[in-house]
Length: 216
Image: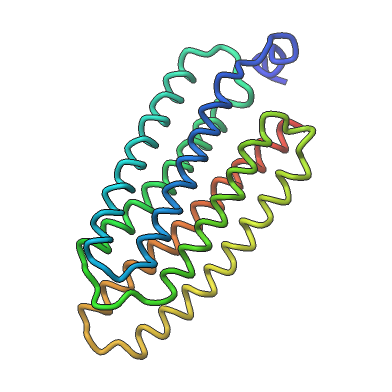
């Protein structure tokens, strides 16, 4: 056992991180809701308006990330391993960045038609974000909430598998039916980032599962 872990048995943990984790999770959930709203609309003006809101949420996420890193640098005792705190916050930030990237590409590429699968995958992103919010909230007392955290992590894993299936079917359909090369490239890129976004949500829960194991 290293000295840092040994000391944690005797020194009170710094609980200032938990409000930051929860704020970050809520911010992620808000970004996911906005993405679903954007992909549910066919109006270009709606896309621009909602994307501006996503940009604001992404900026808030960057501020939370920066604040957490500063707190990490000045804290002697942390609620769990420093590298896990860094990874958790970085992974949440990656998801919000990807959501921002999807919105940006919708506005820049202006595809002639939004594939129905976009909205379906956005709904998966929203559902995974809700489960991440549950996980983060339960981390405040991980030992007592182990069952809830594990179940939420498993749900995100199932969502990621479902998103993979939707992605591959959608790509196959796109290459089979789309005759316009520009539209094919636009839609293929948007599908890639949607799928990656769900992958990144699973990365968040993988980090949480690692934290749970270490805290056992």
